Image (cartoon, rainbow over all chains, first blue to last red; front, top):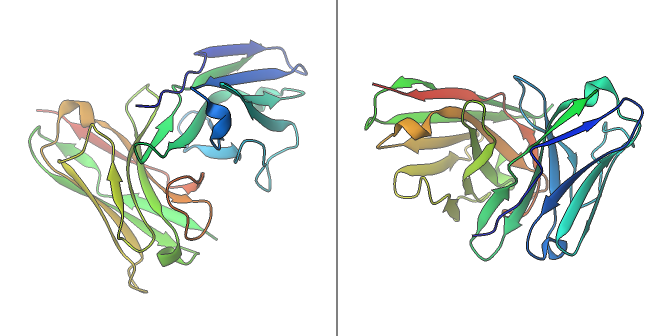
Length: 108
Length: 125
């Protein structure tokens, strides 16, 4: 089965740039979606189809995907960005949705 | 306004059954593939199952295949997604979310937007 690997945690100071990676075999050939989940809340999509941003999501959130790694980049990080972030793909070989293990973003 | 509201969670003994519902409103329910996703306490997201917009295609995570059944009612006044959970195990304890795919007539590969608020299922003796 397809596996997505995320770092358990990323820490960044306010105003700096956070990069959260999502590794998978030839993930560059898939569409990657990213979710933000704050404590006690349902996940919210922040980037879809590798690099598209839903309406209402700040331009500070962006995504890229190539080779074996997809990356969610958050520029000018704010305290309110502190949350868990998950990547997600569709594995067409198994007809399964796959989530990464999640990354906890801490704003120092 | 698109809205998904789950219900049916609760405490159940191992081996028993439970049915979750997800009432949808604010969009053409019959045009969207729907999913169930769960999250065990303190853990990450785990996809559970999907049902295509027309109900003809259903896929399940290996961990629930043969025990859970996803279904939907596309009737205009119903617009509800279901998850019948049988032979429940302690490890099925989680918050269960329903989620709508991002685009009409898509089939599994889309993003989820929005998600419901979730309903907690606790399997314990």
